[in-house]
Length: 105
Image (cartoon, rainbow, N blue to C red):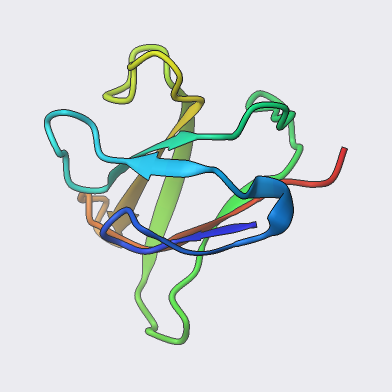
């Protein structure tokens, strides 16, 4: 797992994903996070393998999340594996903490 704070810093990480980095796109868009996994981490983005979840620690925020491959996203920089976008309950982009879960291969 990787727990990501709303400001794109990593709160905690499991040893298997140690070295994962989170960055904002160059335009610093609200609610957009660019994720880069360490070398050797197997990840699938088109199948139901692993998940990304909202994780608010009891804050009670109503919101939702989408995950995309980086092609065509603000995270299109070379080396970023996935873009995470978070929204409030009205569908407006909003900075939110989240958790990435990656099953052991």
